[in-house]
Image 1 (tube, one colour):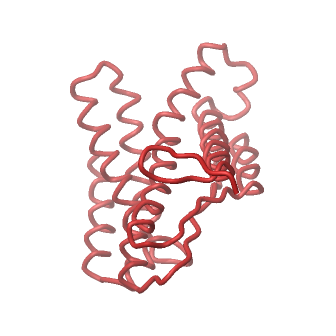
Image 2: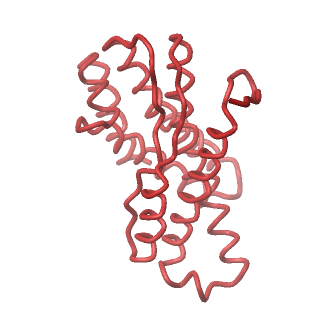
Image 3: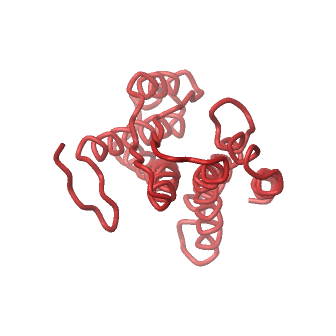
Amino acid sequence: MPRCRVDFQTFTREELRDIAKAWAAISFAFAVLLLGGTRLFTASPGELLRAMGTAAVTVGIGFVLHELGHKFVAQRYGCVARFKSFDTMLLIAVFSSFLGFLFAAPGAVFISGAVTYQKSGRIAAAGPLVNIALALLFSALAVFLPAASLLAYGASVNIFLAFFNMLPFGSFDGLKVLLWDKRAFAALFLGSLALMVVL
């Protein structure tokens, strides 16, 4: 399978295509929400561009870096890790956004190799930690840069992504972290909850 080098990690071309596709779809879906659903069709080009830019920079980056956090930590443990988009779920996300809500499961990093509970927990924790770091970064930048509303939105979206993914259910990151270390789970879950209230 053809490969290309991006920074210090190796991605397949198919994986890069899936990442770009998921980023574009989730950014578009959130842009629709920002515009109020069907108002997309009456929005001016400027409004559409601002909504798409806001969604791509805040939600899009948050989603992509969350998944890459999982991938990079898994690769650090010597595992094979590859992102795969869920195309049907991307379509559902786009369509649901026109109804005024968003049901999104854009994709996931699939990991193969010798993964213990400890490694699985640390790999899972990487995603929410990325979102917490992004939320704090957006919040700090909002103090110094003129685009305060965009940055505040980026902070609130990313801390919500961290909290949501730390819920200890099903295939969520939270359950994997909980099975690995209850103290780590409590720190991430309660920390993201506290920040969600503050930011």
